[in-house]
Length: 422
Image 1 (spheres, rainbow, N blue to C red):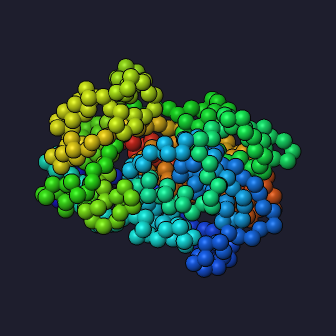
Image 2 (cartoon, rainbow, N blue to C red):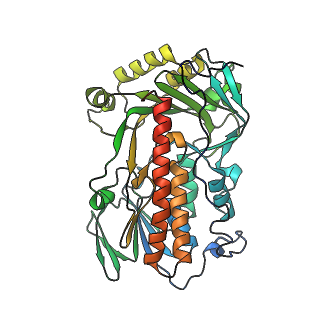
Image 3 (tube, helix red, strand yellow):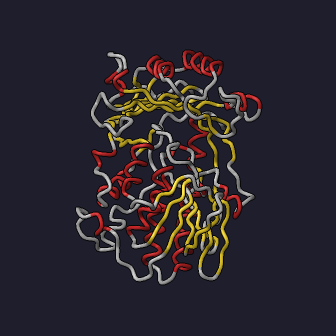
């Protein structure tokens, strides 16, 4: 066995330890809930029912709404994106077993309805051959698959789109939340789950902003049915990892665009971490084909032809053949800038901040969705177990701040190592 897994001198192994985990019995035994066969019975009966506004309708907001509803509270989610414009997003997610257990226990989705898996991890050399193999399973899903299941579980009228949160006023009885269209709503608690570019977080913690890491993630998916005959066994059951001197590339299967789980109907998800200096080079990458200068990401379908040609050329120079082929065949790759973000305070009276809005964890921890889910479930448990809301929020904040800082720091260390940003 070779003592070098990658084509550079350095630590050979991608670490899979230290990711986010939380108790598998969350929201089940704690509330002594009945069988989940009847969905209306999964909501706990509590005396101190809260009116909760959740600002942000992606992963953090949906998990917060689900967990707080099942803890017995009235929750409404407000999402800035207009109805019909929340594009299908096929980006892959590593699905932590605890998250899948929670979704299954609550009757939201069975494991095999929401996640597929690989049965081994291949560490590749530049020729595309595995030089080291790990024989453990990795469960995988996609943003759009989890989103649909969580949103479909919410009662009609509790997920409102085209609602941009613009401010919050706190008073003795709770909060008044204002929206761009002039509407105001009263609530006992505002949960901010707006993602790492959260305007509401900026109002409370203006001195903490996302810090660019020095590299981006090219991302894309390809229908599994389009994979060349010589490649299916390379991608269908395998989590692939390849390292160039300043770059990391990985692949794994995810459900199809409508949640398909059968082999041949899924998608192959790929992520390519590649360095870009902040400034002119990054700005050029993010200047889209409609003439708009973007600042944090480049959505699917907006990459300029010149940038696309450069991407394919670099892929041909440094990537193994099957990975270069994936890049070249993907119709609409997109770009995500990688940041670090950590805030020291999550609770501001009757406002709390969770998920990516509080801690942007580089994807190397496979922790984004799991961390948002953990924040949400622990918030619901703290509120349920404490005698009053102030105590619940204080206890929740203490634990989640510690976890958030630990994950951000470990993700930074791994990312710097994997991309040579020492």
